[in-house]
Image 1 (cartoon, rainbow, N blue to C red):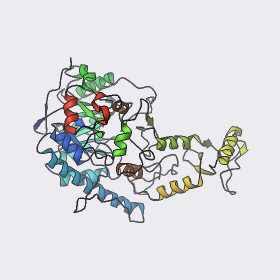
Image 2 (tube, rainbow, N blue to C red):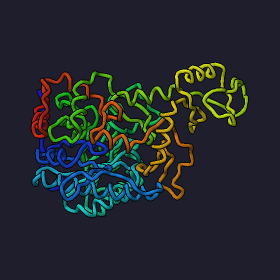
Image 3 (cartoon, rainbow, N blue to C red):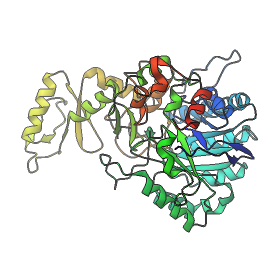
Image 4 (cartoon, rainbow, N blue to C red):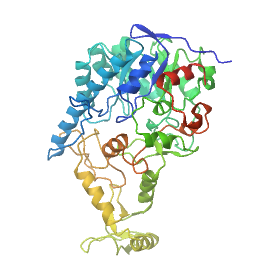
Length: 468
């Protein structure tokens, strides 16, 4: 029998221990997060380049007019702050004094600290907490505490939290509202899978969360500070053993994928329709993101194209060494000389004959074979970089003095800002990055969604509270 959830005290009021995941660029906004809070939970506005509005309520397109990356980066920060402020204010109005509103930021997004300061300064009294992951956000506690706002770091292991706690969070312990454990094998979007962990061998989340609680106890953190289970959470009756479990302490649950398919969800109709068709295994854990992190997204033609591009890849040397004894004679200019193995020379000739006639260098001393049209598009996207990440492997932008990672731009990746803005605002869902958690295939078989039923957020929250 499902034990059921009890309300908790958060931000001075009782709320359900249910958090709406804050998803990327415009995949959660004021409509969905405000409705989630109005239903008694904790709604989360995505503060990652959120939409802002003109006086008539129309979305302002994020068009970059400056000539240099540094100037475009300033435009991006302006858009980010204006958009997040607009979304928070609208969400707060929709909530009507119920639940709570959090904001979500990625620590590795461009200008993260400036954006966070800018948003919290202009939304005082509206935001209850900040969730933050994608990196090691040491400054999160200091920034949140300076505005009297709670913080909820997103981590994927007890070791990561221990490092954050010892270095920074212990100094602002009273503002730690919860620790979000985001399962790297189950959650959608970017995750914290480490180099020591195998992306092909998922680990049971229970012992990892138990270990996290033990780490928190060692730091003197009370069991009343919740751990939020995020990633793979669909039905709460499947997590019954986690509720009121003394080994785990207070537990909350975050839902990222299910809120995508609601009436209030801002994602376009084509995206919602596509979610209902997914089969198990259709979500791919991959490492094409320019952040360098692993992430999970629907394995649509966009991702398959990136997979194929990386497969058309050969290692080279600049002089004949060992097996690299054969001079490459396709895909390069007459003034460049690259040495490859006999087998890779054959591969290169085959790709050239199939129309992939241009060889692009990667930062790992490999050549990637693409069509002329593809190279032109890659070069254009790299040139249009607006510094949306603190470090970008695709464009080699970095938020430092030189505005450079010091590495060659990587043609195996893509402009993440461009594709996430495009898919969120109605572009082809098959030709853009479509983030989703690994449980998304359950939309197709869950009877709650029979006959194409799309619930309101309130209907979804009510359903979740029954355990189903």
